Each structure stands twice: as structure tokens, then as C-alpha cells.
Length: 180
Length: 107
Image (cartoon, rainbow over all chains, first blue to last red; front, top):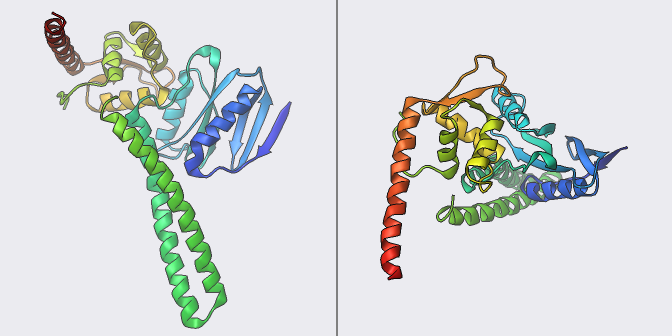
């Protein structure tokens, strides 16, 4: 039986998202496809699959992206979905461990990639907020002031997300001084 | 190109050891696990990144001509062999120095 669940995760919550998908798999609901905030599951043996997701450097549709997906599939995993630059895989546990990032260097690189995508969005929202605030005050326009408040709210959200990713990156970098 | 600047990662060392024979991606993963007695399990993304970088550096090359990376086999180059032997000497030196100091310490 198939089941569709709509659920939203922010980009910096990818580990929480992965954990949720693995919890579902542990209950016998294996991820079948993933789209924007929409996950489709199919019945499986409880704990039959391990789920992994990651953000690629390139689009999953690019040649580099396709080569990478083919490579991961060659290791026994199934490609089950993509959302922008994010890709979702599942692998039967009986085929062995399933990890995409096994060492600190690749984990740090992955985090930096996500941060590089979110940082410009945060900066952009901040300046749009300032711009709208100035216009709103200058022209006494409530709409512009409201837009600036929204932009500042998004900026705060992104800054909090970036801080969470950065804290994680710092922890990994400390580890990387001692271990691979 | 191809010179060694420092210690290789464990993954790279074992991948180079594996590629003394032609092997595809999944074969490398299985071989590394076997060589390390089950201790080292390569993550797919880590292996892919290492293979790409080692190809760029000319330490390994892809054997198959077709574009299907599921069937692509890789093998070590002469430069790769030099890098591997240099790392082997470095690791041997680490172990020998460690043994000398620790044996002295145990007395």
C-alpha cells in the first residue's frame, strides 16, 4: 500500500529529515518518491531499507549529477527522488551499510555547499528589508513596511539556520584536526 | 601533477591498493572492506569524490570507454603506484618509530 505524507523541513534540517525517513523505514514505510514537501512511501519489511539524502554540487539533471547518481546506484542503492539540488536514495540493509559521507572532509564540504546557497539568500533578504523599510517610512506606505518585516523575519530564520549549520561545521572541523 | 604532499587518507590508500587490479566502484568498496578486515567501509559519496580527484591527479584512470559509470572500471597509473609506495614507506616509518619509542617506554 502506498501512502503520501506532506511534511516540511528546512534545508538545515536535512539530518532531521533523514532521521524521520529512516524512522518511517524502520516502521515498514520505505520512501518511494520525494517531491517538494511531499513524500510517498510504500509498504516494506520494517527496517528493510536505509535512507540517505544529500545536496549535490550540481543539479541532479546535469551530466555530473547523473554520473554521481549512477555511481551511487552502482553500489546497490536506488535513486528515489530529487528536490532542487537534493537527492534521495534508499538501499536494502541486507546489501550492506549505506553512507554517502563517511569522513569529516566530505561532511564539511557538504555543509559548506548548503551554507553557500543559504548565505546569499539571507543577505538578499536583509537588504530587501532595509530597502522596503526606507521606502515604507519615506512614503508612509504600510505595504512596504509589512514587506520589510517579512524580509527581516526570513532573514532571521536563515541566520538561525546558517548558525546551526556553522556550529555543526565547527564541531566537524575540530574533529578533523584529530581524525580523518 | 601526481606528487604527494602529505599523508594519504585511509580511504585513498586502500583504494589505490585495490586498484592494482581493475575494479569498478562497488568492487572497490567490497575489496576495501575485505582488506581492512571489515573495519573500513567506504561511503559512496566519499569513494566517488576520491575517484574523481585521483583521476584528475593522474593516479588512476578509467578503463571502459562507454559513459555508463555503473560499468566503469578503474586502475592505478604509474604515478599512482609511486604515490602508493611513498605512502607505504611513510607508514612504515611511523610504525617503526612508534615501536622503537614504545618498546623503550615499556622497559
